[in-house]
Length: 89
Image (tube, rainbow, N blue to C red; front, side, top):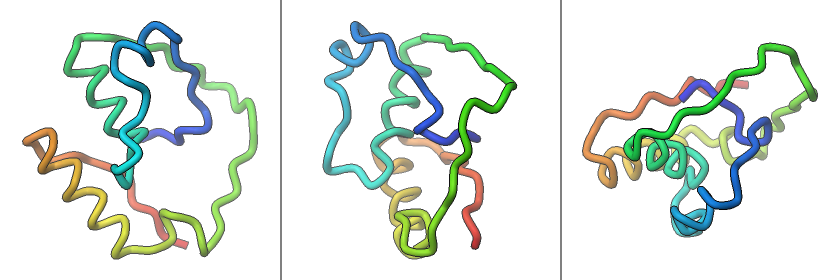
């Protein structure tokens, strides 16, 4: 779960298979990644930085209550503790 979604590429057939994103989820990108992992899919890690990500105070992850709610939502849906790296500004 130690990822930043904007740094990922997806196979179109995988996105179609898993119905893209659940727009009702707070962390829809992590939900999709958990679905991939639960289906036995694997990915590749490229250690070289390919972009610079700037997190703003008003971003989704800048709100600790929203982050907590998102973690609970993932736990409820996937039935497990879900680790998401801490987001502190």
